[in-house]
Image (cartoon, rainbow, N blue to C red; front, side, top):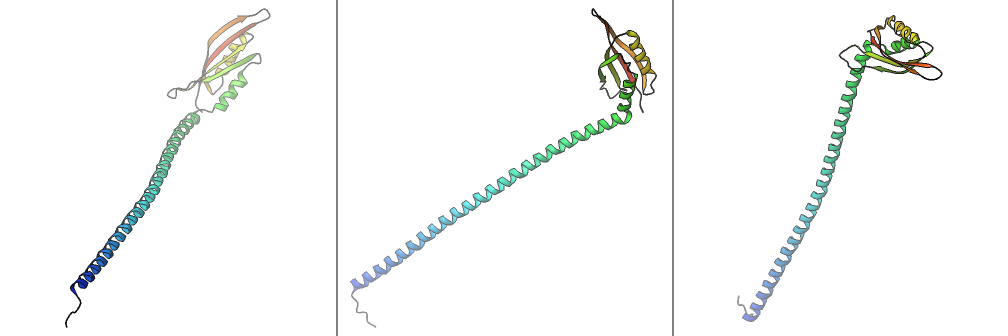
Length: 181
């Protein structure tokens, strides 16, 4: 077979096909680069969203853990308070002690305070403070307290007299040791 196509036309045809191949390669490479960049951007965006949701979950779990720690600390505090209260209350019936003090108080005597010692290593001591119009009532009050089975001892720890134009007032304090039930 004889090729009768002139060499210039062959060259042009070869150049056209070469330009076509180069253009096609450029389009394919450009498309691949654009798709790759778009794919990386999409992957980066989805990873940021995923990372953000994981960080939010970590923060939520951390807050929940701290809340649980706070609840455990409060529960331990309450448990120790309840334990201390139960050991303190189990040994002494304070309602009966207060009733005994109320029943022993003379009618002309006014109580101003009742304080209980907070030393848990020793039996509790109650300090009763008040005012009366005569000394004899204070002494009778102390003696009547001492005869109660809930009280092991009572003593007058302070007694002061104040005089006004119309009457005398005695301010006192009595220390009382409480016995166990």
